Image (cartoon, rainbow, N blue to C red; front, side, top):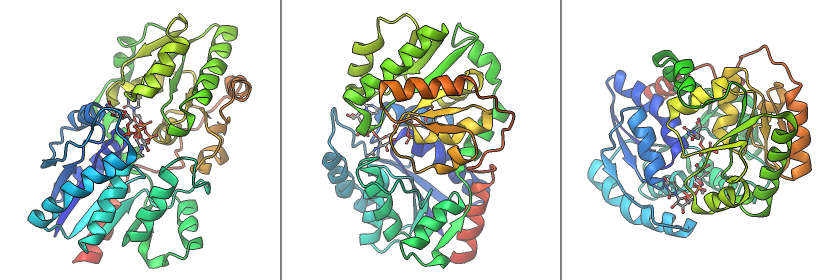
Length: 359
Ligand code: UD1
Ligand code: UDP
């Protein structure tokens, strides 16, 4: 059996890395195709996990459109599929990389396995275009690896046959466990930020870009000023995000702006923060493992488990709602680190399932 693993963006590398590495450990024939939808941020993560892609499609262009990314991948991937003829192609999540590669594999009648299947916000335009991407990927996939029972229920409601769905947890918990075991996060944090108490903030969602992002930043700034606390913000490489962040808070001395940091440093920042404000998917899934509360700066969520387990609040994206959610978060005391998204054994489960069905 030959397994082809696809990565293109930062979160895909983080969540695919432990699965791919587990397959190699089990002596499977496996290789990585990197689309490089994110050039710098993808490379940074491949370095952290010491992964070398067998093929690099190098699709990223400055200010790329969704159509540019789809078109470049769909032109370049088939040549590789023809040369390698993998038995199964694995994609992760809901990016344009995952969508394009799943569709390509479907055209070439290569079975697709979807890691992180079944997430739904139930709003086609929020997150955009990810909600559509997920639905299409799930529709063309033969193996649907749902992280939670809720994700499985979403798929069943859409009429997907139960025997295609496997609840395995989220591989992000495998990834963070690997890093936690290998590095001294406390020591890394102490040489990265000069404060004892800080809020960790990340922002990048397409639907937040514009007025909403300015409002979120204003809500965070108000909280930081009133509570005399710093805000550590690694700024995403998206030029549109950078422009808004720099124009809105660069002059505010409470904001500590950084370039995107490698995964080890990010987890160190997460471990040491007071609480998190984010519109990221992955960060929501990681925070519970560090006992950190998450203010989700979005209007919808496909990760209700975070809120139901008491680890987060859906704050919306207005200045007032984010500020209020932060005030509430500052009063929360968490003593659990039980992660509702996984237990660190997702990679092994995926391997066992694919081995048993493909022998
Ligand atoms: C993509 C995913 C999103 C995921 C996010 C992770 C889609 C539709 N969206 O969003 O689900 O949460 O990645 O961060 O696939 N850029 C650089 N260098 C980099 C990375 C990005 O310059 O290393 C620039 C790109 O050229 C582009 C912009 O950032 O102009 C946005 O990147 P893109 O991949 O189109 O979408 P994201 O918003 O990053
Ligand atoms: N992350 C990182 N460095 C940073 C910011 C985030 O390594 O400077 C990691 C974070 O731990 C998480 C992932 O990137 O695992 C989330 O990526 P992003 O928010 O870009 O995408 P999403 O998860 O929303 O798709």
